[in-house]
Image 1 (cartoon, rainbow, N blue to C red):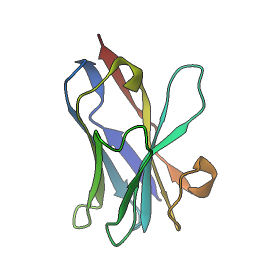
Image 2: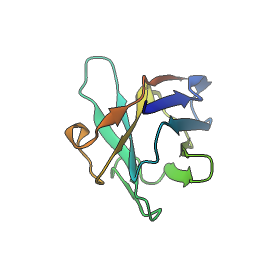
Image 3: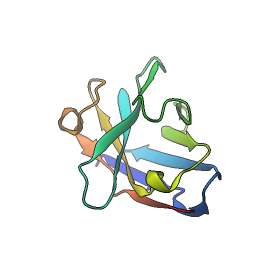
Image 4: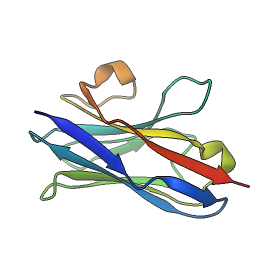
Length: 119
C-alpha cells in the first residue's frame, strides 16, 4: 500500500529554520511536491522535484525553501529557512507520475504536518 508520511513540523520563532521530511513506502514515486494550506486558504504549491532531481518552486518561497530527495531512503525533504509568520500552515507532501504545480496533478498525499511560526 502506497503511503506518504510527513514529519518535522512544529512551533518555531520567526527567523528559525525547519526541515520537513516525507517518507514514502509501498512504491517508488517519480515526482514529489510540497504544498501548504493556511487556515481559510486554498492549498498552494510550494516546491517540486522530479525523478532526475530537477527542482522548481513557487516564486513566493524560492529564496527560502529547498526541496531535495534521497532515493536510497525513498524520502523527500523541504528545508525552510528564515521562517515568517505567514509560513504558518499545514504542509503536505504529494507524489505523482508527472511534475506539476496543481494539487489535482498528484495521486498520493500525506496527512500533513503543522508548521506554526510565532512573531
